[in-house]
Length: 364
Image 1 (cartoon, rainbow, N blue to C red):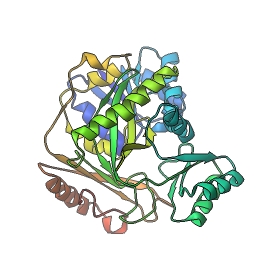
Image 2: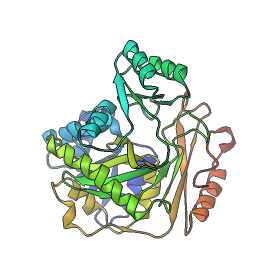
Image 3: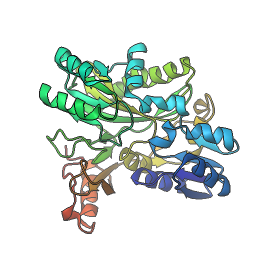
Image 4: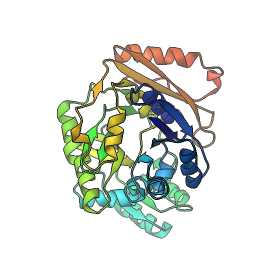
């Protein structure tokens, strides 16, 4: 099977590596074009059988719909445009949480500064998020009303905003394969969104590790029933059946798991620590996601023992300026050994002393 992977970066590198190891795969072909039309054309000319879309922008802009219309012989792994709105609009996601009784932070939203100012003063909520896609740079965790108002004013120059209450707890990243009917949870991971410990500067992710010994089976069962199942069932009830991978950013509070964010693709950097731990042929599971109700026909996924730790490094000034440059992944029988392996590899990166990186990934 010739599999095309759309996108480039750490997540896509992890996807390509995991796909190459699958017995179902004969060749993994990178697809890197500027437009959806060109991506479809490149897949057709490359005689691709199955395509996996890495980044969110093509999914939100309808690349799965484009494949179905223009190249129906090529199956595309991912949600269509209507389903991908779960990531394309935080307002859409939050209002659906309220409609489907999915636990999440209390919120308001605004399309003008006047409305935002009144909401922030009334609610006292100080987390400000851009409604649409923002490449991991559209969330402000502010300390007080003044900072919240300034962040709202900045974001409102280009987007509507969500205004949220702050929740307290331990965060975890949950990715699940979805077939329009069911959600099959992958191994949980923990992402480090803040630029450094104690900072309120949010990034696209500075590292991750998996699995999570501190998250019980009971808590994972609650995440499955209270968040994942309700999301998938709710989307189906609205005629937006969700296929592909669903990413749920969850915080474990004293009142139970609560949903922080939804992405319509594999997490980055979470993919780098979850996908390498897959054991066996996982391509049939990706294909089953393209078929309504296809996942229950397959046995449960298998996982390797041990731990994986990913540490990202970025140019100085990230995320205000610059961008993430790369990452290293360490493995070990214990979390401590995987942590040490990752930081040994990080020390070998040329010029690492001139870059931004966290020294505490998986150190808790």
